[in-house]
Structure formats: structure tokens, C-alpha cells
Image (cartoon, rainbow, N blue to C red; front, side):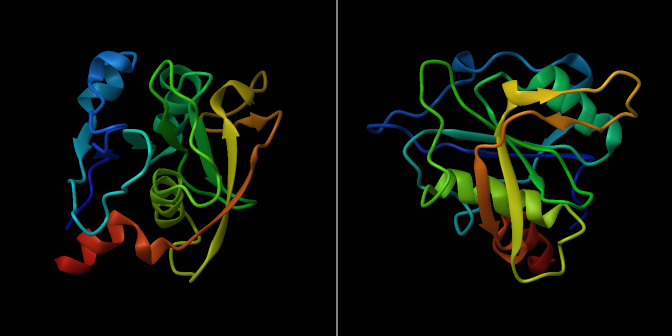
Length: 173
């Protein structure tokens, strides 16, 4: 299966049985909306976390730049392969909800596995994914598209690229 230019994995797992609606999330920019396409809600890869999750994955420098600097809200969780090239991945946090925990939360692991799959660490068993709030990202003056400075890390998540919904989708083809 060929994945879209910008992969968007949606998971509707509700808090107390309710699912998040797009009304809780700010609108995406028109450019990014035009390039969004669902990876699909795979039963095997859908997280069962405490909050509804929307995960956005940039697939090139321009998409990474737009995702990190224009689309992500300050409280969203931003993820990237530590120390090597890869996609910018955002786990959207609906307004009024706390960000999920870094360790043991299925939504965070789901997003981290996607970040790992869409990176130079794709062929490794495990990789380290850096996690920060999107509000802690700064674009240095004169930086190329996709380059970002993380001013405060929240931590690290160990991800397994083969566990991502994208890997499962491509294996099924």
C-alpha cells in the first residue's frame, strides 16, 4: 500500500465512552487539509487510550515545517526520532484535556510508533523518540523548512516501527 503524502491516523477512543469530535480540535490549515488522507482505523493498531487521539505525520520538510509551526497547538505532543532525520509527528490534545502520559499510554505509543516508522529508524527493532510539547518548539531565523529547535523536552519514548499501523498496513499489501 502506498501511503499518502501526509499520513493522518485517526483513533476514536473516548473518555468515559464519548468520542472526540473535530469541534474540540482547531481547524487545520487549507494546505494541510488538502494533503491529509486517512491511513485507516486498523483494529489491530487502534489505541485504546484515555483520550481520543488524532495523530498527524509530516512526510517531507515542508509538511514537517507546516505541521510543527502552524498546525500544532502549544499543548499538543510533538515527536521526532532522536538525533536522526525523520517525520515530525503530532499527537493532538483536544482543548481542555491533559496530554497523555509518556510511558504506558497507548495513544502516546501509537504516535511514537508512527514517528519511528516514518523515519530513518524504520528498519530498526527499537528507536528512541524525543517528545516535547509543541509550544516548546522554535524555528531558528533563516532555518530551512523542517528544521526546528526544541527548547524543552518532556522525555523519551521507546518505539517499535514494526508495531505502527502504517507498518501493519504495508505488510498487508
